[in-house]
Length: 165
Image 1 (tube, rainbow, N blue to C red):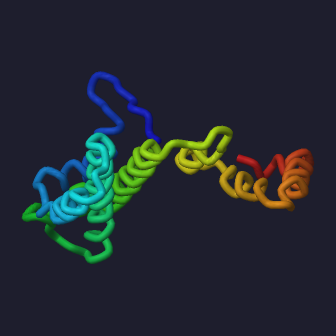
Image 2 (image 1 turned 90 degrees about the horizontal axis):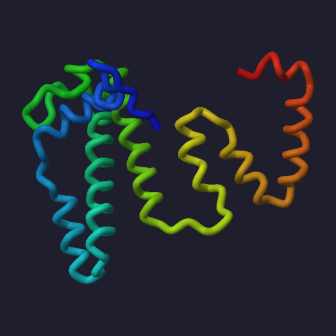
């Protein structure tokens, strides 16, 4: 995910998330939170996990509202100008995507990882533009070693080096 880059007058995370912050200035009806709280009457999820789940759900919902307003060409949301009307479509898409990745990261912290499991690197790979996700899952198949051998051979050839960025 984007690391916070700071200098005197610039905070990259704040700039990227400005459309999301704009949207969250006015709270919604919070129907989802009330519904989840009612289910927790029976489920009895520990408070810290419950709060994290509510936060993730709220962030994810708000992030998808950014996309929804663009798709529907909405001019307002919750009585304010829609975020894409204020900040533009590209920045609003980036903010929504960034928040979804933050939700995935936060959700992955709720579930204990299995020892030796490489899946924890998936989010880092996606945000850094790497191509290891298919390789990780291919290695779990019987054909995994053969595929890995082919990939190493491709990388070792001079022709492939000119196409690698």
